[in-house]
Amino acid sequence: MNTILEYLSGPALGAVIGYITNDIAIRMLFRPRKAKYIMGVHVPFTPGIIPKEKDRIAQAIGNTISENLMNKDVLEKTLLSDEMLEKVRDAVNTFFNSQLHNEETLEQFAAYFLTEHEINDMRSSTCDEVAKLITSKLRDKSIGHTIARAATEHVVEKTRDSLAGKIKADRLVEIIAAPIQDKMTQHINQVLAEQAPVMASKIVENEGDKLLRTRMCDLFMGHEQQLQQAENGIVNVYRTIISNHLPRILQSINISSIVEKRIKEMDMAEAEEIIISVMNKELRAIVWLGALLGALMGVVMTVINV
Image 1 (tube, rainbow, N blue to C red):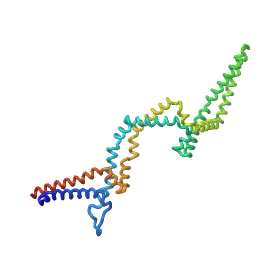
Image 2 (image 1 turned 120 degrees about the vertical axis):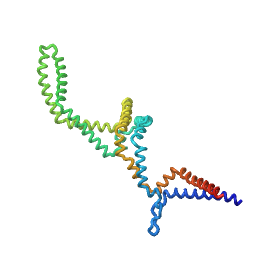
Image 3 (image 1 turned 30 degrees about the horizontal axis):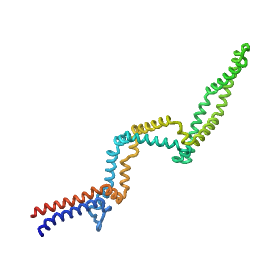
Image 4 (image 1 turned 135 degrees about the vertical axis):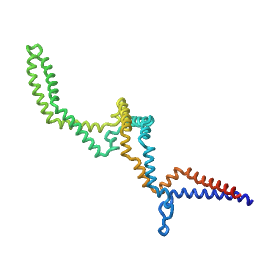
């Protein structure tokens, strides 16, 4: 009986020691979280390895993620995959279809994304730009000439009909029409030069208000072909942005810096909880592996001592 206990005590003691030492070693990765001192003398292995090397670990993880997991090639391959492009297309299509039944006005819809002040500023600036463009076109002297010519030709045709059969009627009409057209051109150009800004602003403002009061479903209804073109255009824009601007986007985001900063700001209790929740199975395996190795060492020592 004593012989059996002697054979079993070595492996059992080795297993217990291996289990306990590995468990303590894992705990010492995280604890203590601050350096300890006894009578002013620093206690070795405090703080734990992870709290002590937190900044270096944060930098290493940030660099690893940035260089190997979220670099240009990996992200571009993922973001431009057929599956991702189909998701973008489905999202756009879903949005368009939902708007076919949306009875909100354009102004109400915009309020989800913009404040009332921003909407008013956008409406005002857009109206101003469009009004300026229309004003510049109306002030073009060719506009007055075109209007006067069309009006004169219309009057000439009507006059010819009423003077039909009269001697030299056509010639008389042409002689009178020429100076009338010139005078009319001058007058129209003058009116447009003076009134174009007011006319353009009034037209644009009225149309802008009408557009904002238009229901979303009315904007989308009956434009299936244009919506399909818009869907293809949005997907192409997305593809172009990823292909041509991803390096600049990654540089501006600086993933490495973000990850490093977030880890440095993380409380050690939170970090410990995250790591253990992710690797609990593996850490437990290490503890039990320590018990197994301890037991094996106990068997070896028992055999040697026999």
